[in-house]
Length: 296
Image 1: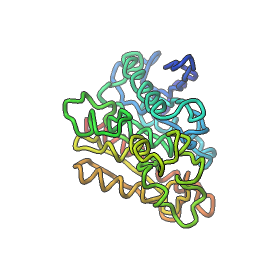
Image 2: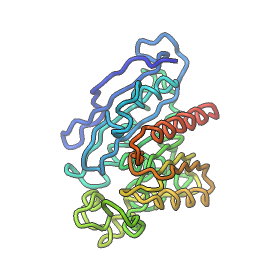
Image 3: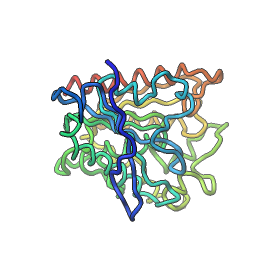
């Protein structure tokens, strides 16, 4: 299967007058000009960058040399890929980023018929800060810090997405600094850390705000299937963020797949700078989404 059209720069939201854009990567079978009316699944991706930098076309430097971009690879596997921007921490503090992520999911759901998307097979995907947002979306987070929606309240409404794949996501901003590896480049407890800029306060000094921005706070028995991937030598987001989050999801009864890449740093930067880890994780991510789509 080959990828189809790429539609770039579509406005999906305008919070406070700021236009937010997304790109669409379509499989060959999907509209608006595709001939098939068979519905296909969709994946909504959120970029990394510590909530401070980054934009919707980026998935880390290691993937830059791929013959097809990761988004094109996923589209070629039969998915509509939505890659969306969100407000950075210099533009607004949390929960603005979550609101924007939810708006992107709502946009593709509202336009599902235009692109032959099955509304029941919409998934979230993200790396680093974007993985954090994907986890929050999947758990029905509302920014309050209490499980809701598909977290622990069955009356909270339909899940925004049916499954989540997250690469090296921050999941617990309260304990993130304490979990940092000895050779960490940066920690959540540093003055002016990425996490502090996100919530507008140092996590240690505002644990309630840190908890409200933490996916771990929203884990409940209605969590969707998760695929988590993390490097064991990650100097930016501690590997314990993945292992403790996976354990919490499993304890809540969720289906969880955890892939740990031995010796890999953040963004799959191996000591030899090879793309092997990124390729392995991308293949596993596509396989996860395929299995979710087939099971629906």
